[in-house]
Length: 178
Length: 178
DNA sequence: GCATCGAACTTTAGGTATGAAGTCTTCAGG
DNA sequence: CCTGAAGACTTCATACCTAAAGTTCGATGC
Image 1 (cartoon, chains in turn green, brown, yellow, red):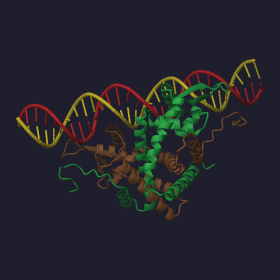
Image 2 (cartoon, chains in turn brown, green, yellow, orange; image 1 turned 30 degrees about the vertical axis):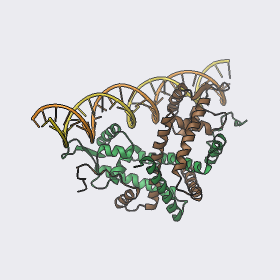
Image 3 (tube, each protein chain N blue to C red; image 1 turned 120 degrees about the vertical axis):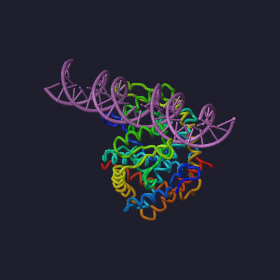
Image 4 (cartoon, chains in turn purple, brown, orange, yellow; image 1 turned 180 degrees about the horizontal axis):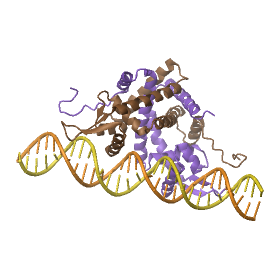
């Protein structure tokens, strides 16, 4: 009972609503509306990372490297940051950053040099090739993102962006209650 | 210029709007509305994972283990799944799943036994302790989640859940265009 | 101006992931 | 039966991350 005729297990990945129904049975004071939002966020993010991973792999870089390229571009010209600052923004330890920069330097995506005015600091700078890779990845990403949002009207996109921004502000408050 | 008086770099993690402003300068045909949604999703998820990580660590388990507990609970009573199915749902390789189950078995969160009706298969089953840990984690998580959404009205929560569900449906279509 | 403290990065040791190869069980044919 | 093929899990080699110790440079106090 519950088994398919050929004896294999159904494997029926539960839908979001099925998941929430089970949660409600198992955990009485669950707010299904809240749970739907956070579970959708979680699932969505897993799927999006898979999509981005495929795109960056097609360009010969990893998702991890793309994160570094993004951070450098976001910092604005002249596209320079210290390893610690990069690590903080990406949520990595400085040690991991050291190795990642090693690899990206070997691949010509960034350069690493000592700051002559303060020789303790190191400056990681985007190369032209790194900038070009960022652009390639960005082009692929925006196509996917536009596709992802295609069922939402312009007004809905605005509302969604707005609500997500409020959640982001809230979570930042919760984490650094300065 | 741009440096703070004490000579340290400003480090000023760019806000979401600053990030998008830079992107627009660097990449002309960017739709800022779309970018705001996806960048907010990405940032939000990083922050939420940090929050969940702290909570699970306080309970003596890892976020990775919590993912397994969730998948088993969601599968419903009697809380049994095969390693491959678990791996597929969590986005891991079967090899990684083997090791994760090793650890969780050692910690008493799950049991692993061969399926007697088909001795190729392995059945991973939640223990009472595993179920109890899931409940503890769930209690902590829902407090955080309620806190996260506190600025949104009930109506807004509904709209948000609805839009996210539509995005989820869309990304699933894009990835398995059966 | 020398010593100490602190900051920024790197190195090392250990854990967890991936990908490929290996083992064991089941099923279908000859 | 016995063989070969396919499926499910595990093992092995390698890669990348974390935590902690180490190194180097700069700033402060005497």
